Image 1 (cartoon, rainbow, N blue to C red):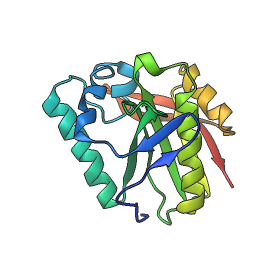
Image 2: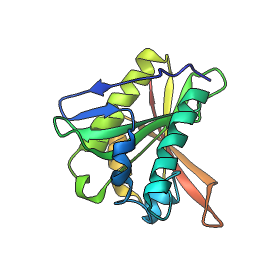
Image 3: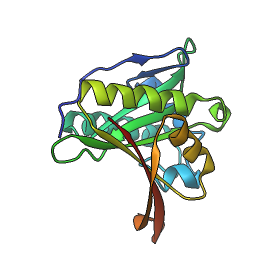
Length: 179
């Protein structure tokens, strides 16, 4: 597992990726209970401030353990968290990782997920020395497929029954980008 930085801020023309803060807890309310987000991430199904604070604290612990680097996405100049982007499932030699992301409904369709994914992937390839970043996309999630395409990822095929959610195993399309 890689050594992840204790504090990280990445910026592009469109977005800022930064640490999750306790003051960002309300950002989770818009996605708690959304099947596509909760079934495929660690976001709680029900919103409460206590659940949101606990989720933020778990992201901090995962980073300290070197297992997940989760960053809040904000529109550049706005200062409010509107989503999350993360690198996780680092390979044994820390040469590959998986990327995940979600946005609040009001922030979707504006290119923010693409900008955030591109920024974090570029940082991971350069700063962590990753050689490959993998997207695992539910086949019917066309928006996520477009993000993968826009950052230059290539489809590799379908991994059958590779993700368990809601007591069922789901097929996932695998895309990757790398050196």
